Image (cartoon, rainbow, N blue to C red; front, side):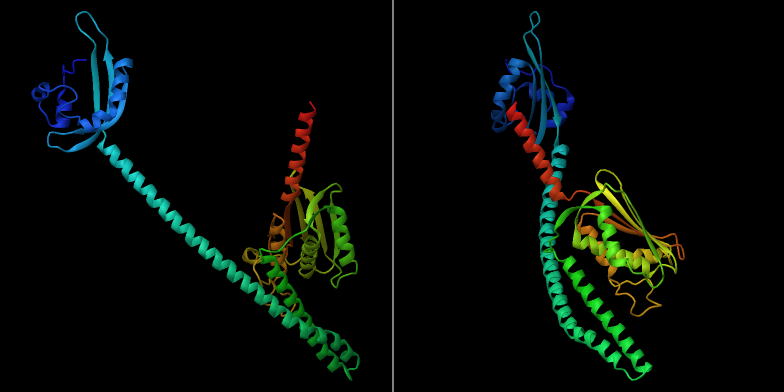
Length: 380
């Protein structure tokens, strides 16, 4: 390689600012490839001489002493007759590409910095929210107990006063008082329950139950006596469904939804409790009534805290927390709950979808299968 330039095109001359005749006076890599950059690519140049292939990035210097990034591609024209090996190089100015890369890298760094700042802000706000929720729950618990304690003596004393009431007018006044006291007690109990379900520290005790047997037992124990509206309760549940639930909370879920169906059901109507498998992973429970139904607007708010569908017509019938509690229970089980109604006067359906296997038991089952598989391999 004699390093003499054999042929130089005009585009390259324009790139570096030298005339063709000026360049012919130099030997490769002068005058455009500064030694500090050329020396750093000697290994690639030597490999190029052996293989005939070259692809590198470096910096050239223009005649006006400004530097710019380039990409080099090289190939070889083999020796032929009196002509020796000729080395052919192609150069591409990659200034715009490098600028775009720098801008991209800068934007990435800015994005990472912004993301880190956002993460710190979210973490701080989350900690503040957890602290606020904790303080709120502690306040509700304390307030609940402070309110509940004076109510208990009243609940015990009012029936005694009713028996000794001198006339019907006094008895009616005491009955109104009793209804108000019971409403207050239920409101306090439900508020405390909601605070417990909102707490991140609440623990559910999951166990496997037969869905049909459990719901049949709940209905028998809580709705055996005829209700005021003479509403019949019927259930259609597959015999072979087993599901992981917290029994105490599951009981509360079924009782709340059925009580709600009775509350808004029609005289001499029917409530259906239906249970079936959606697939191998989830089970569906539906409580269907033929009562007053709901509007689209009402359906949007039915799971909101303290929302009562019949708030205009009732004063102490409902605390407005029953469905909120049901929603928390279902979500703590890893499921979903929704409310449907074709419209006013057309009944309402509450639909709960629960996972058949709780994650804890599912993980244990997977680990057991893996251990069994490992034991089988060892035996082989």
